[in-house]
Image 1 (cartoon, rainbow over the protein chains, first blue to last red):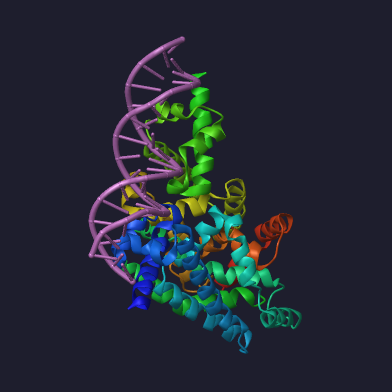
Image 2 (cartoon, chains in turn blue, brown, orange, red; image 1 turned 90 degrees about the vertical axis):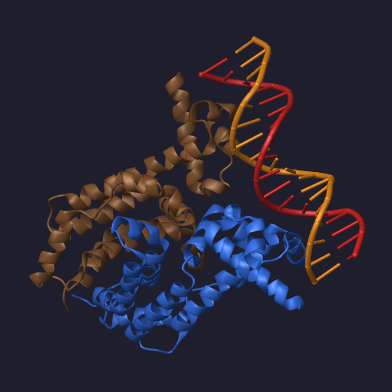
Length: 200
Length: 200
DNA sequence: GTCTATATAACGATAGAC
DNA sequence: GTCTATCGTTATATAGAC
């Protein structure tokens, strides 16, 4: 019983924080979403900031872990790109508000999250860096630094979610068309990336 | 005199809204930033929402206009890609918080901005769509739909700004290293994109 | 653990003097 | 147009009964 209430609150908080951000979120909305009395939020999580921090830590570490699982794996480079695109876009389909939430909060209040981020101690995986450097020196791919390689990969996967409303608006898509766009992208994006990497 | 105060307020409001978002922004912070009395905000702009709307409209239309200037121009496709990368990254260097601001607000409150967006009536430029379709049918580039072409272009330019804090954190960059990363990217990104577009 | 009622604080907004 | 003082609302947080 005890566990269940706490979990309901946490799930509701994640949903509301993801969608509204810290300042836009209302404790009342979280309580309503959890179908629970507002004072329970304080009973279980003391205050809004603590609740937020737990949600952010969970969301951030979850996404980082998932991403790094793929990037750290022992797979050939091009295969890894394919796996990454599929896994990452799949993950974001289930958590569409996650990236903009994380980016907005990191941007709005970087010093507030600094300790948390140091604690999680995120680094680009060594094995991937070696793969990239080797592919470059073997002239399998164009000369590119690991940071650019990774940023390109992330950019192309994340942007359709960060800019969803923009895309929908500019290209006049309804929700179904947007879903089809994503589905096609999940299939075709790795070809574009691998082409871009291969020397001309 | 009158004009000057209004402008000071507007500039301050843009800065604070860009950085904090609508809910995170404080009228007092805007007043402090403008070095002006808080009640002046209401005198000139009536209330927070109206002030925000003017800022958002200005920011959004400014960026859209600039982007479309390049995309609508009468330049060969690959040249256009190069111009776009340089212009757009340059614009974002001057307004680093602009994209995350726009995306976050569009995401948090899409129905609130719907009217504004319809009013601005943004569409992908017809000339660019024709160029892409022609390049595809001439087998100059891989089969790609205009929406994917444009999304790829935007993704790769925008993400380094949206994810700045993330990039800085994961790759342990100081500010100077980040600036160098951007500078290099502005030079090299179009090569990556054009490679990706060319048939293998 | 859960509820109702209420305190406390923050913030947007306004009134009114100058 | 600009300032000070203050109102009214909303949101977070707590007290206390059950």
